[in-house]
Amino acid sequence: MKQFFKISFIGTALILLVSGCKKFVDVNTNPNNAVTTKAQFVFTGALGNSYRIQTSAALMVVPGSWVGFYGHSTSFTGGGAEKTYDFTTADFNAFDGIYDNIGDYQYVITNADRDGVAFLKDPANVMQCYMFQQLVDMYGNVPYTDALKGVTNITPTYTDQKVIYEDLVVRLDSAMARIARATWPTDASLTAQDVYFQGAKDSWIRFANTIKLRILMRQSFMPGRDTYITTNINNTIARGYIQQNVLVSPGYQNIAGKLNPFYANYGYNELNNVTSNHQYRKMGAPIINWLKNSVTTNARPASAGTVAATADADTFRLQGLAWPIGTTPSAPSNTLSNYVGIPLGAGSGFATASSSPIGPFQVQVGQGTRPGMLMLLAEAYFLQAEAAQRYGVALGTAQSLYESGILAHFRTVAAPSTAGNASNTGDAYAIRYYSKPIQNVGWAASTDKIRAILIQKWVSLEHINGLEAWSEYRKSSGSTSVGVPILPATVASTSNPEPVRYLYPQTEYDANTNNVPASINRFTSKIFWDVN
View 1: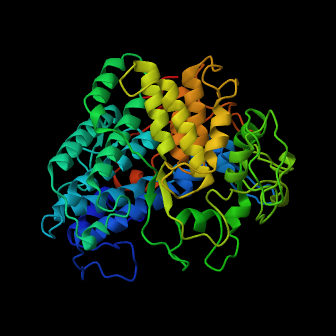
View 2 (view 1 turned 30 degrees about the vertical axis):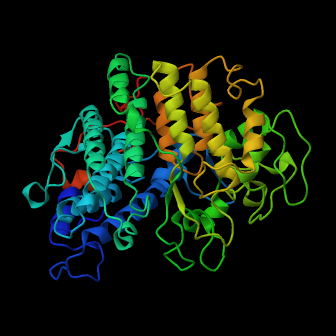
View 3 (view 1 turned 90 degrees about the horizontal axis):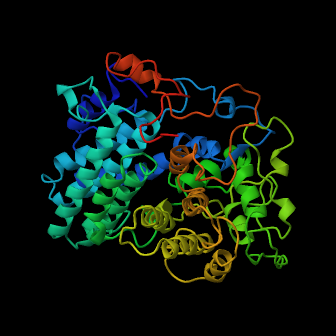
């Protein structure tokens, strides 16, 4: 975090937001000559930045590596803090950027009436809830009640993480109710500022309700929370949940700085030159081996023909989520041995040319302008499936929701960056897949239904949300229902256990010394919902 005046980030952000200066860390901008920005433009930028933050290393690949999604090419050095879990307050700072983003949404809430876009206040509130949950899931207690108060409180106290979670549920309920009562504009000049739902208020309600369900189900392994969870599911169950993938469509362009951020970070640049991250950040062994060896569909058609149907490979999703081995492969392989994932912490034997890069689901050369994917319909179905299985709430049968989640993911793998709810070439493969009598694939064959749901959710979060996958792993990791098929712990020589949290950044210890929690241990200071 940049310390502009050596004060707490939250206070700094809001001092400058109140004065109207958006790009407060631009060294070429004079903060004493601030300009006023319309709330609707700030809202558009904030939505794009929420996705950009979600695709950052701190939220995508670091936690993704810890849950088996990614490994490190041994052609490169580095990544030691990830591989050994030996990180410090100087590593993985997601704190500052998220508070900057939350501050942008606060600017919208504060100025929307002035700018004639009052309808944006509740979507901004929903997005603050989305981002605050991420903060809690990484850091636990964070500034909340005293945050976002500008110059009146530049060193905010920290609020208990469970209190924040419960308040987020209340805020989402209130936002949904207000959105439902309101009449939203249809003017294209205003709806275009909403790069998620294009001004469709019912979609915002369903999105808010899905965030709420995610918050509630994160606590599903906690003893004594069943009544709280079921009551809060039931009081908004009629509002429904997302009905399609939540896409981010700000108009990405094949111009430096304007590409889809996932593609630009882990794929290619605007000249179609491969980035070092595409060759360094490779696929992890747990996810590759699960797709190759643990489950079954007939093979997905490949450019050179088709591989024979096999009893032990989910080739359809394998060929979408990963490229075959190579530095810059551009065509799928029909040979399963050409898909190689890297165990986290491997020191040799997995050079760039002999391991699998991130696949065409997100990275295909020349396709850097596709919409981003913030949340998938598949995740919403798996959340509902877990709720139905655990609590018997009236969402539908757990089996139908589970199978709908698998179907939605196959459809999205077949056609990335689309709504994910329309029949396509993925349907036949999905139906064949979940009809197989295989543990954690077929519903009837799965002896632990919760584990089956969580494993399938784990697969669906690959390249979408590494933090969410890591959070789901931590909530279940000490139970028999652990939501990964194989434990993804590092193979590096280390005496460290797996981490249970991030550390507060050193910038916050420097700027908000009296309030930031002390004696935080990355291995034992668990987030409140982590009871394993």
